[in-house]
Length: 217
Image 1 (cartoon, rainbow, N blue to C red):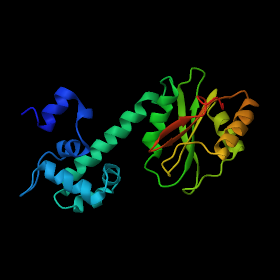
Image 2 (cartoon, rainbow, N blue to C red):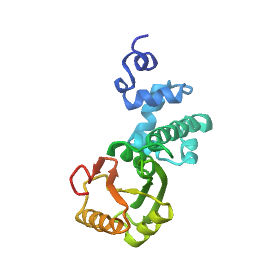
Image 3 (cartoon, helix red, strand yellow):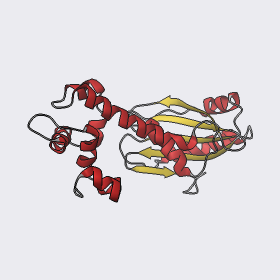
């Protein structure tokens, strides 16, 4: 009994379980000729990785052998719960804390995108979120950013501070020279209208980087 995934999760915590064991718990039961663990291993083998599996369209999951509508719905619901949990730290009207809070919020919205997106978190005087907006979209190589549009939107929302964010679909969060350049340019543009740039956070599946923590804001 102590070796079953459900019991080990409750006693040792979810980190003690492998991707296959966690997936087996979500699937609940197996199919004729294979248990839930076998089904989970088969799905991971078919897709190659857990992110690839969970990023699949619901219709594709439904068609997978042994999955069907009920199990597909479970997987999609679990992923959406994760996204909403990640977004929770900076829900509207709650104060924004450390850079990691903004990173969690941005990962929940941007990690699944195949193209680069540049966005802004507009904050009030107490650093509570007023509005999140995706302003510029690009290819996998980058997005064109217009400082005038960022300033315009900040003024429209009566923001006192702004956090910039964008994703790197390549999987590497390290800021480029262009990222550093546009950060300084936007900081100067916002300062002209007395709006403070708090941070620029770059997110990817490999992690995140806060330019404020790097001393570049």
